[in-house]
Image 1 (cartoon, one colour):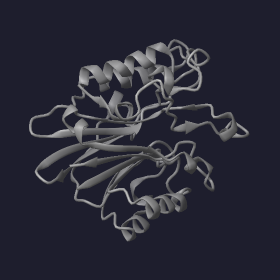
Image 2 (image 1 turned 45 degrees about the horizontal axis):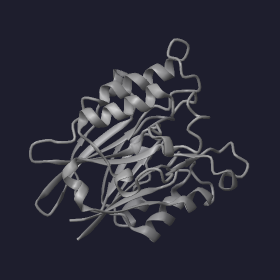
Image 3 (image 1 turned 30 degrees about the horizontal axis):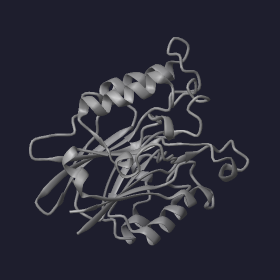
Image 4 (image 1 turned 45 degrees about the vertical axis):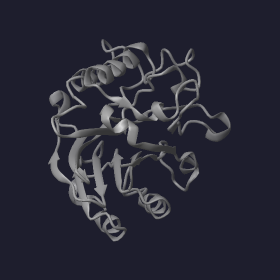
Length: 266
């Protein structure tokens, strides 16, 4: 039995609902995790998702900014939101779903971008990002009787081949050493498996984000892997495929991120 989960920073779900529907009709993931939905929970477009078969939806919304949601064809148990850094941002939501005899906890994250200057002494946004990462180190992949999957826009490209130019981006937020080492520490301390790099090892490049600032994003191809799919190690052998839908960056009114889908064969 195959089962698929998509993560996508949609950069305003109400504005981009037409391309969300377009994606769903073509690709039909079993679970769709969205970040940066930019709306409060009563404003979230439930009706079109339910019409497409996503009857189970949990939302952690916020006025104007941030926000995460999980839309699922299978029942979702629980609705847990963690208040990272205790500032009240809507940056995390999790639930449990079942596949056969397996219980799997799914985490959906939107890690702070961190601003432009990689120095917490002059840029509080960067300090917030580093503090958020520090708190994530306590999140464990292995839990008694429950497997884990973690997805989301983590706003860090941790490996050399996760960016278009390792040397040129070492002082650019999302690829600075303090961020990349911090994320590697989150993975190591939590016992997580980077499924995207299991499927596509280095040195092959993987990008999931292309800046709006590029006049011709496709020709320049200055991408970064900011979106991630991790799991507890026990799920690694069941991974069948990872698809990064680069073409979505060229759709009408696109997000600067593209959908990333993991397919499992349980």
